[in-house]
Image 1 (cartoon, rainbow, N blue to C red):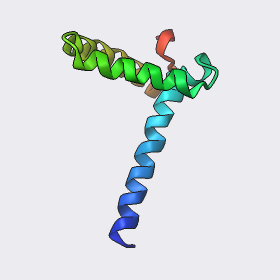
Image 2: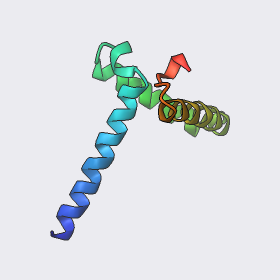
Image 3: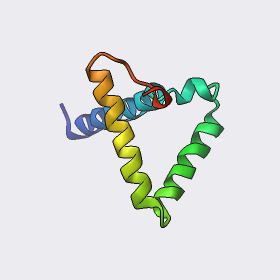
Image 4: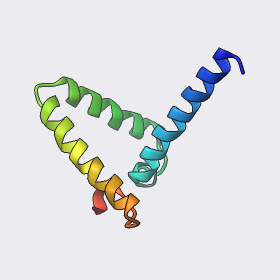
Length: 83
């Protein structure tokens, strides 16, 4: 397999995994699959991370995400607001 094919597959896998996180968090259902709303929320998150509250937000979100992933691995399922 050529190098560009390997890199393309890596990129595709990463995009699928990131999209899966958006679905796992319930964002797609909660927004009615409204792409503009989802992008707006992601832009707000990026702005928050770049602000003076970025360090605090990152720590808070990382803890919440770890909790959701741990619950999912334990078989408890996960959804952003239901942990």
